[in-house]
Image (cartoon, rainbow, N blue to C red; front, side, top):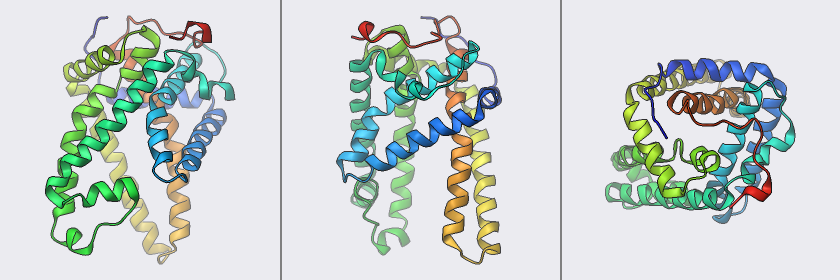
Length: 263
């Protein structure tokens, strides 16, 4: 499996948007269905968010399959939302469990700064005490968590699709993913900068709307939800574009393998 130098990371977003434009209505339907499923799971305290995290690698493969179908000239359809569960299910579940444990470990590491306030905020929704917010301990914990999350994201960026499409184990897929991102750090830096700039523009727009709407929170939430749903297809498709750049020689199935081929 050969890792090659990627193009400019900005092109991943451009190509991701091009894939979105091929079938925007079905893209939005599938993304909304996924968002709704995650939201419903989130209503089950503790177990729901944990389950959605464990299933994330399989769903990420589903979105990769959608992109491959579009690239091969096919059409999106609702059944593709669960196509990621048809190939390498057991390995993807293992990756999901490892991802969940990694998140908990990173949050646990951040607890050295705020005595676990950020960890409880993320895992249970309990807001940090006012003192932890004002003395900067939660902010420091967020910085520590961000630093700890970086290698985790590197390891999991390509791991699900490598495990599903290349039939390799969880540890091997994490290894290849980590070093693929490491070797292409410049492209990922550009990609991350572009996302940061887009996020800054979004926050600016929300701030302006907050002033114009005079604090109408429900309107602002609706605007944020609509914007998120419109941008998620491009973001998901950009993951596929990055994979095709870094692993161009890997086979890309136009359709997921049959169930019988799953380990």
